[in-house]
Every structure is written in structure tokens, then in C-alpha cells.
Amino acid sequence: MDNKAFEFNPQAADVFTREVTARSGQDITACYQCKRCASGCPVAEDTDMVTPNRLIRMVVLGDIENALTNKLTWKCLFCHTCGTRCPNNIKTGRIADTLKKMALDAGIDPQQPEYKNFHRAFFNYSLRHGRINEIGMMGEFQLRNMWDHLKKRNYIAILSEIVGKSTLAWEMFKQNRLQLSYHSSKGRDEISRLYKKSAGRKWI
Amino acid sequence: MDLAYYPGCSLYQSAKLYNHQTKLVFGILDLKLKELEDWSCCGATSAGKINDFMAVALPARNLGIAESTGLAELVIPCSACYSRTLVAQKQLEDFPLLKNEINIELSNKVKGVIKVSSALEVLEKTISGSKFKSMSLRKLEGYNPACYYGCMNTRFPYDVLIADNVENPQSMETVLKAIGVTPLDWNYKTLCCGASSIIYNPESALDLMAKIMRDAVSRGADCFVVNCPMCQMNMESQQDQFCEKHGIKERLPVYFITELLGLALGLSKEDLQPGDNLFIDGMDWTQLCGDSV
Image 1 (cartoon, each protein chain N blue to C red):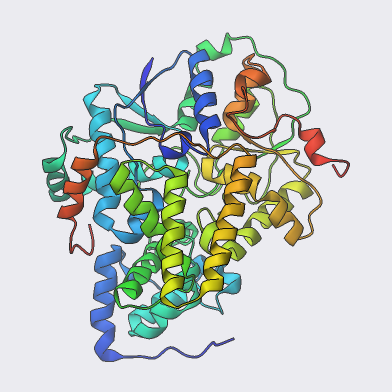
Image 2: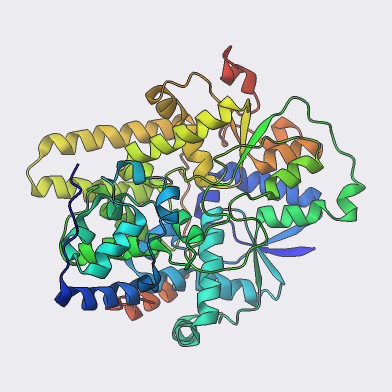
């Protein structure tokens, strides 16, 4: 277990805290480390002692590297238990989400390699078709994973991707959850105009 | 009473059964669901992971369509769609500039007048009315359900007002008690099931689901009752996996709240789960459970 003290970086602390505050919309300096969030966090058991309150501490101290690469940032499920229990109404789930986005912006690979591909596939599919068709969305997700493996010349991973997703599809088919019908929305034009508007925006 | 209805993608896809049951049950309760014309995806959690602006703009389009119908209330059965739409509505209200920016591109502008409710909230309100009390109910015997709410019913990424208790919600219990079923008191009714992380982080998700399962089983539950399509899919389709991983012998069916309510209102198993287009063999829970319960 790697549980070292956080690095205090006075130059980075101010800028980093302000950026995280703006992008997450959370007043993180209001945290007084009461740890109510820590006791409720469902994934805190396997994040190497990084609890939501400690995540906030990392940001405030300007320990950028630790904040972007610790396990909690990547394992957070966005369940908002921390946020509903915080006496200062800090929604730490949104801070973890913001840190994930900042890490991806900085070119850091996500700790679950499929995280980025899944949400990308879902989001892009919903923009393109207006609605989600699970077969199509999962197909795009699979292609993105396979492309990543291809770039690394990892042919075994490509094979196991095909086998894994086919097994999943077969399981879903057996449970009658696999729908073959296609549905979409005509609002795609409106949606793509809105998407163009969002270019370069880092917060709402 | 007429209500605007937003089913959402999953009710057209993997949770088609929930759409079917919701329409049936609402019909019996004399609530007419008017499906929004040309509704689009709300972005679910994925939009917010990539693009904060679109996470508001996508539900805003549906809100605009819903308001153009002139109806007073928008009903959403899926918890994720409900959460996204409710949060987007509050954010549009709190940030008027953002609302203007989004409205410029929308053909149906958002004004912010329609009330956004989950299907569960509407059911809870309806069963307390005098009309429901005069309806004859079939007695449901032998159900000992654990009501499982998950995250999205009561916890939101933004401050919104809801009627139910955040840590110990009671709306499903209220509905079940009204049809003569006594639900269990248990610990993990709002614990996260892992949702979509079952795809990219299955270890964490399976551990969480096993926790939920173990507590329900140890308190003598014989089924789960849920109102979220994602929770239903995870808890049911992954059940063999997480139970085998954690050495749990029991298996429990996972019903939508509409299934038990529909049965009590006189619908048959065939009405609620017709043909082979729909999934789960939930009704036959004795067979699913085997000898261990």
C-alpha cells in the first residue's frame, strides 16, 4: 500500500484549486476534514486509503500528480453518498469526475482502460442517432477497444475482446434483453448544433 | 389525468418490459401517458463524463418538447433519465445565460414550468387518492420483498428538492403496503450497484452487488423490488456471477415495482410478461431459489 504524505506545492495549489472549483462547481475550500464522506464511500475499501476527504486535501495542497492518478479518482462510481452526507454540501463525486476529465485532457491513461471508450461510445452514439441502440453502442465500444489494442499490436487482446463481447451479447440474447429493432430521433440536427456550441467549453 | 411521458432509451431496449408494465399499470390507474414526440437520449451519466454542456443540453431538448405539450407533469420511469432531467431543469433555472444559449438552438424552448416526476412518485401519489382506495385488489401472498432504490432516486449531483427521504426512502414501501405486501427493513437499499462500471470495472461492481444480495438474503428476503432499469439489469443478469464469486447460494428474482402492483390490480402474469419479446422469469421465484430458501 502506497500511503505517503501529500506533496505541498504552493505554486500549483492556488491555480489547481481554482480550476477544480470552477470545473466541478464545488466550494472545496469549505472542507474541514470531518470524514463523514470517508465512512460512507462504497469503494473506499480498495482505494489504498484515499478517501473523498483526502482527495480534497490533495487538490487544496496542489499535489496534482497524486490527484490525477490515485485510485479513488478512477474508482469513484459517482454515487453521491459523500455529497449527500457532507455538512458543507461538497459533492466530492463531481470533484472526482472533474479530476478524471483533467487527467484525460493531460493525456493520462485511465486506470480502467475501457472507461474512456465506454463513455465516448455512449456519448457519440447518442449524438449521432439521437437515441441509444444497445447493439450499436456496444459495437462502437468494442471497435474502440480493438483499435486501442491494434495500436499496441496486441492481437491476443483483440481476440479476447471479440470472444468477451460475443459472450455478453449471447447472455443478453438468452435473457431476451437484446433488441434487434432500431430506433432514433429526428432531433439530431438540433443536437449537433448544440454540440458545436459546446466546443472548447470546460464547464457548463 | 393526462401526463407527458418520457420512456428513455433503455425502456425501448433492454428494459422493454418496464415500459410495457408501466403503460399497463398507469392505464388501470386512469393515468394517460402521452409519449413525447421525437424524444432523444438524455445523455445518461456518459454525457457528463465528456461534455458538461451537453449533459444539460440533451435533457433540455426533451424538457422543451414536454413543455410544448401544455401538460403539467412529465413522468420518467428510468431513474437515470429522471435524475438527469431533474438536474438539468434546476441548472437551467439557476443559470439563465446557459438557458438562453441552449434555447437559441431548440425548436421547443425551455421555460421551466413543467413538473418532473419519477414514475414511482406518481404511483405513490395515486395510491393515496380516494380513487385507488375504492379499487378492488387481489391479495398477494407470500412475498417478502427488499425494496432496492439504488443511487439515482434520491442522490443527485446537484441540489434538487425531492419528497422522499435521502438515506431511507419510503416510497416503494408505501406503494407495497397499500397493496398488502409488507417489505423488509434492511441496510443497503440505497447502496450503489456499480451501474455501468460493470463493463469497465467489474470487480468493484460485483463486490457491491454481493453486499446488497447478502444483506437482503440474511434478512429473509425472497425477492428484490426495484424501479431502476440499470439496477434491475445488474442485479439480475449478474446474479450468478457475483453470487458465485462471494459464495452466496441463494438466488432472488428482481421485480420492477410495476410487476407486483400490476398483479395486485388484477393483471395476470401473461399480461405483465407477454410472449418471448420480454425477459425475466421472475414469477417463478420458488424455482429460481431452489431448495436453499
